[in-house]
Image 1 (tube, rainbow, N blue to C red):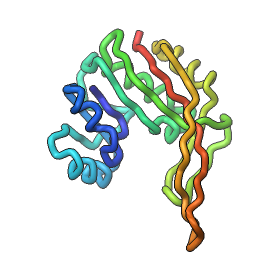
Image 2 (tube, helix red, strand yellow):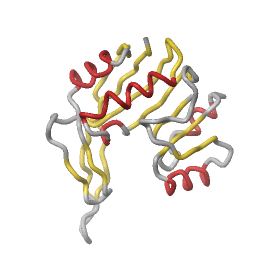
Image 3 (tube, rainbow, N blue to C red):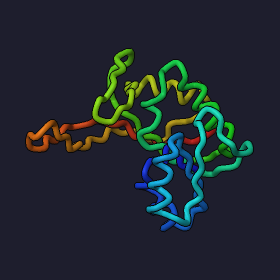
Length: 168
């Protein structure tokens, strides 16, 4: 199981509980440090999603939650090609990304991250173009707690697409 974008390790226990051999990568060393504190037995490494340090056709499964919406639209094919390279044929995985309008990126001052949201049809097209088949897709809503100054917390709805995909 390959997780791209481990972050603070929120999802690692899901894979370890399922007895999957887990490998997690993230670009940010600080986040990997937090993930390692939370799950000390997990294999974690600092890697770039455009150049993963694994042999071709290594993984049967993958998990990419809320990562690809940080990739610029003109670079998503490079990320999907690298994912395709490290996955075995018929590998199955989960991808979630922020819903939004194409060509309307934004920067979140609170997180310090750039977002490049997607329309479902556009991301499905990119998957197909890079030899992934969409098995299932859905729209998921979550509420994000956001505090501004000393005001009471506000809950802001966020919409994400969830894709179950299979490598061809």
